[in-house]
Image (cartoon, rainbow, N blue to C red; front, side, top):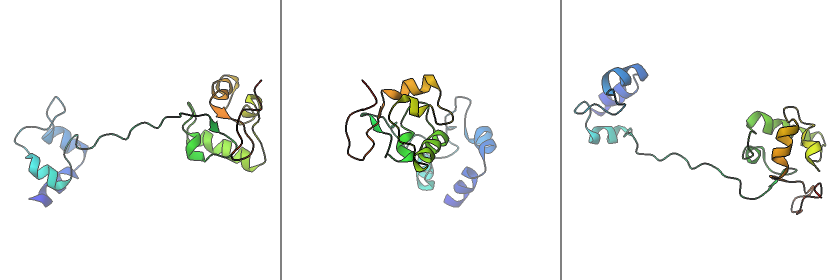
Length: 132
């Protein structure tokens, strides 16, 4: 029985949409019992989504990880990679003007990020020397 349920669940979106799910998007009553779904490891709504990651302190842009850079608004994995590459090539971020030297960061994004990053050049440095 569990193998049958697993095969049905692995059958794809079309099968789930046409056979197992009702018009409201919920499981059709009586098609699959909750105990069987639980055994197959697929109970709708049994997992809470991961909480969103939130930036609480200015991000030390000169030495944080690429993954940490994606906490900044409008910075995805590609732009984070460009920032990290610029650091590897020797760019030390000291102000918003330095941010604009990275492809994909224009004046508006640089101004947005300026208050969210810490320009301290050395790990453990504090403050934003690029700001007055």
